[in-house]
Image (tube, rainbow, N blue to C red; front, side, top):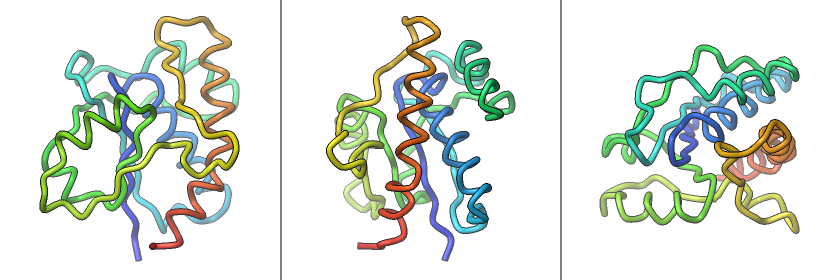
Length: 156
């Protein structure tokens, strides 16, 4: 059974495309890429069509994570029908998604770090930060891959 997962942040230039790339790379390394289909999107429309943030692309490339091909897009109503899981990067994103979600949607909404045990917190937006902020986001996303995968596979 194919599971469809959409990662969402405010602008779809830093955190959510990084989550898509990091989790996609982890799935590939585990031989699981055929089980989960990934995408990422934004709440806002400020960066639609633009590539991921250059600083995030560079920080990811140091770890052999390719983000060059990713382009920002905004969440649409059909995303709530297409995706099984919609994963927000922070509480503000989650609140926005809950407000957008049609009553008929069967998509499950959650925070990226909901399944990381005691580490539960939001993924900070590095957009206005420095290089180490982008590296930190990648660190946290890499730590979250296995717990997120385990949660997606439980189907409950």
